[in-house]
Image 1 (tube, rainbow, N blue to C red):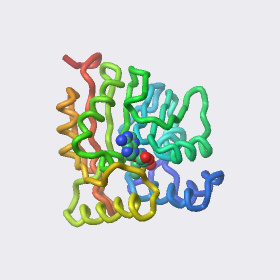
Image 2: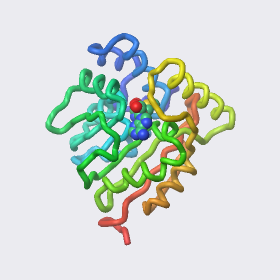
Image 3: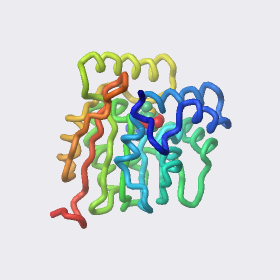
Length: 230
Ligand SMILES: C[S@@+](CC[C@H](N)C(=O)[O-])C[C@H]1O[C@@H](n2cnc3c(N)ncnc32)[C@H](O)[C@@H]1O
């Protein structure tokens, strides 16, 4: 049974139909991403009530779609340096006064004060030496008390690491679905250390890979400020 079998998360076939403006290959890629990652856990880690959210490395907009289906009522900005992915997100979901996509890196986002920043399955494409800077850029876009949530590979039995590496290399080098500077695993412990060094509080790592072929960890932290910060 998939851990995505939760209200608000569609089945892969339903998603395939919902994205009919995209090509078959693009829809198949989306459906594959949906069924291969614990999206119900990601959506459950985010607040859906009228808050603002920055989605870093938004790809073709899957998180935006799932949030929409879950009743998300805030402002959403998805950014990704890959213009092809952003073009796909715009073609599929469109933009509204509450939802926009931009083909930029997070360092080019001028807005500050997001209640939440999410980064889903992106850090393995960022060179290890650049991850602290990227984390700092994300934290600086958060409002005081705002939260940063990352889904990353890791956790579970050791054989899952090998599966992760093969699939990640395939997506980047062979299939060309994903653009990234490197393919270098980044597990929950590394992400938690990055979050703590960037000054986030209440940093937590949760195993989110049960029931999936890949190992996943969900890492969250909160910027100091209203709600209990120092
Ligand atoms: C595996 S895809 C995940 C897309 C989306 N978050 C999802 O889960 O469906 C990785 C995404 O990270 C983007 N990416 C690569 N390097 C990045 C960086 N330095 N900053 C932000 N996004 C990046 C890629 O363009 C790609 O869209």
